[in-house]
Length: 305
Image 1 (cartoon, rainbow, N blue to C red):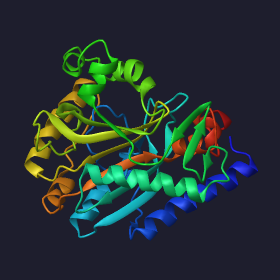
Image 2 (cartoon, helix red, strand yellow):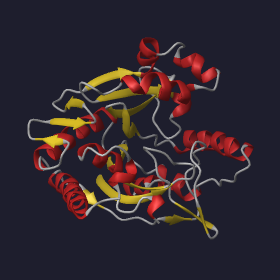
Image 3 (cartoon, rainbow, N blue to C red):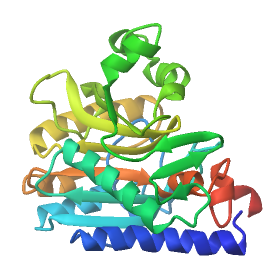
Image 4 (cartoon, rainbow, N blue to C red):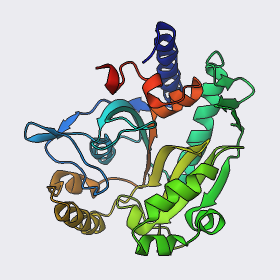
């Protein structure tokens, strides 16, 4: 739970993020928290709200805005996911999400580098940041100066895991291996982009033009903590419907319900080539203020309610 000083720091943090995006000609948007239909993602369990749902991310609405002519947009909002509890998780959390059209996932990587450099320079009064572009957290010192490290998923599995990414997928233990054997090594000297995830793990991402087995998707890591998930956006409504059918089947097999987001698919045909990313505000603020866990970085953690 934040002190009065912590509340002031968090306010500074939010203002700095908005200043960065406005300086880069991004439009701040505000979309609904409650939706009648969500994007079918079998790994996420949403909270019901009467006969609608609380959003797990603002992605659905923000992509519809891209389809209607927006090009560079961002949003800071609350999102809700069941079974998201722990040192780095909360059922309700604050998300920063931004989209650029035209754009691809490598453009987002540059955005991340520039954003964190700006925050380090602007918020040097926070305990974990300094103007020399260093982030300090729990005894770790991370150099934020670009270029940041980039490592493919296949390379990471070869280097750190006991089995390959393909074997992990076949054994249905990809996430377990990633979390226990790979993540503890990522992003300590410099932030690291883990990129080119298996296509099966990028249901909303565009297929790589150089390797049809992977999606143009990455996750950003600092000090072993995953901070952001970004990708080049799939804008083919037929292919997206096919992937959604697979996700809906997975959701139904788990005893849950999901509907096809028809209005989203209608708009998707008009969405230009673009890229989008979701970054966990609470985690980044936790790192920037030398807090040990999410509960210390938010105004009211669950155990204080």
